[in-house]
Image: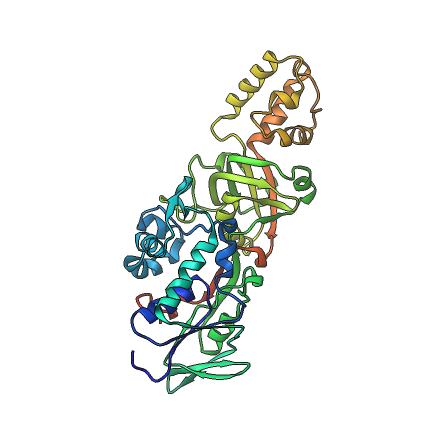
Length: 397
């Protein structure tokens, strides 16, 4: 670590700050360049400002969530994984906790505490940090990196660490600069796609009609076909898709998961949709994609019919929408019933078997044709980028 020039790290996000701090900890002279006015801007918005740091899954299950490319992470995570991260945070006064579904947050649920921990790490190692500096290129001489180019001049370097971020949430500084720089160095750039993003429905009128409806533990299944061609018999009883143990989905099934979702004015979003979004976006490249939503996956259609009839029999004078308010969110019941063609205020005693059957069909098989991802700029992560077969997973070189 006695090089004449410093190690230059491009980008002061989580990866860049960790890399810079660790290089300094090992004795390197480190210069960290960040084009924004402060570090960790994407950290600050992660988890709605609460910062979901990691997950309680064991290593194999964790890596499985990344699909076919997950094995690339094995060498890195075998050396530094969840326990090491939690220990690192504790070292700088940030205690962590496990929330439902295994998500791990700072006890304070304040992303600023995480950024402060990284800032302490940088200061402790004597890392020089310069803000407002945009790197426009990386120079190579005789097959070795020699420095970086900025609008204000050339900065020599012994090594360059590229941690420039993806292309989602550009207001945080992730504007995809690193991809163009990597391409000029000869790297292959795999097509960029939004990951963890809401989906736009083709029928926005239906989405607007149901806007704001929270779907709790619904089963959502994506198919490689238009909505009118979905065969409900093909909806699996168990989750199937990327990162899920068992046989991979066979077309026309794309992915199926149970979780929370929300109907938005343009389509559908929520945690389970974000998980499924990349598989759906990739499927859209091959042809039409649609989803069917089962609001009550714990019940069969016959069970649901009987349950509804018992509710109507027990509450003959109560309005239709009030009878089912504990089955469907209160702010959603009336609009959902009207979608079935019935009158939400109709007394239970007047609800016909046809009314009931149409409601059952909707509750078990609410369909949307998917048009596209909502917006790359609003995605939580970027899929694609530098081809992994051009990176050494043991060193990231």
